[in-house]
Image (cartoon, rainbow, N blue to C red; front, top):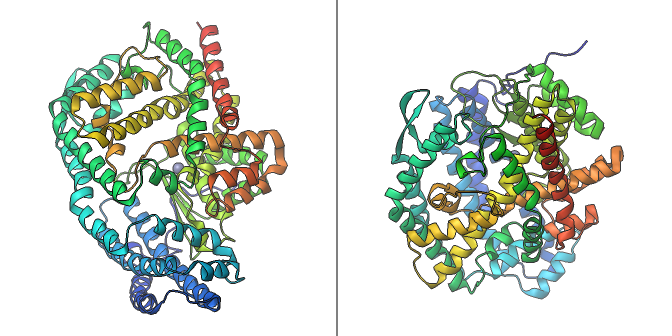
Length: 599
Ligand SMILES: [Zn+2]
């Protein structure tokens, strides 16, 4: 007999009673003396003077780990409370308490990191050879290497202090400006007022008039305020470039590449391979235009639905579909996911007051994960569920790894999730009940390639060119529009009839100050994961062990070394990236052939 999987997650097993849980209160209170202790330890910590200090450094790292586990356990739990009920006021109070605790921990940790980086070279090398620290060599060297590229401690502290108002403040202003914009659009014969986010969502509306109107009204709204957005963007970029200049960094990509532990050569190879393979996707866009009764696609048609998937699955059916196909890939993924379904690790119920979207969060003290989403029965819900299970499986694979060695970068963060989603999306296409259904599912896949290879490529092209021009002075709105249009023409391989010149104003990602170049890691992650997936198809059932070994190493080596060690692939070469792209090209070709035979 099959077990009925719960649709509501079990949080009580972690801390019973939700935001008024006495156990959670005790846990939060316990963090205070622990933080006091840790701060004392940090203050007492000294620059290592000889190799004999290896043991004491290792002890400090253990204390770091304990603190991380303790704080993470409560912050993840509180995150779950906030998501399941957006009106839980007690949870939001707990959240600010928890972020204060994390801030205390971060500054104490920073002091330790700074001391470590001041270690004399010979002592450092001896430390890195010591048995007690061997496991942490990559992370410790990374801390040190990063610190060495910075200005003096005093200067960096000044920059951090000034950036609150002078840098991050601009990013906050952006959110305010966008929040003020209201747009009136006629939907179903009625004029309604929309926020920017809501109006953006109309880009996938079935009615071409609605898509066109929302695009035009949005463009008009951005145009009206373009000077404010140009000022904001120029200030953010100007601040960043000035800091880079003072540090002696010439390439604006230095920091984002470093954050993603990858080389410029790798990035160039990735975009090089993508640039050479635009034509199958241009063919797809043209086919889509035909299906919509046009000669070429306008910007506002890119997200238009050609046909919709109508198949629905109950939650139980969706879960079983996932498990059935995970099993074909490997026993561990299936066993792990079954446990997640059975033990109530997943919140999927469709009910009011839940936050939109989906996420997966790890509770490291109990070595569990929790997945949040709203399941309403579509194939895309099933894919999201698989995606989040992939994230949870990544944490599962990392269980034997020390907490300090688990901080993987953005470009590999989506490896396991995209991989799991791919298993399910491919199976769904194969199992489609009709050609119409198959076309809808395929389109879903190809749309993602269009987003990663075309749209995100155009964002990257725009941003690199803008930063180069910004070095020479302020770039006015009119020039930003030109740069954006050029980038979109190139990114979409000339496949569009019209572009979105004010996209630079509309996209929040350009205004995120904590993560520069919030674009290429997405494309990297997608293609990297596809390559792992291609390898899995090639090697069959025995691949899972290798796959888990790769996941375990995601935070302790560069992207180049990770691929070389576990896939035997050189990612600084275009040939590597072309293999992943080839899988996407097949989908685009199948879409074209199916839609021509269906006519
Ligand atoms: Zn994800």
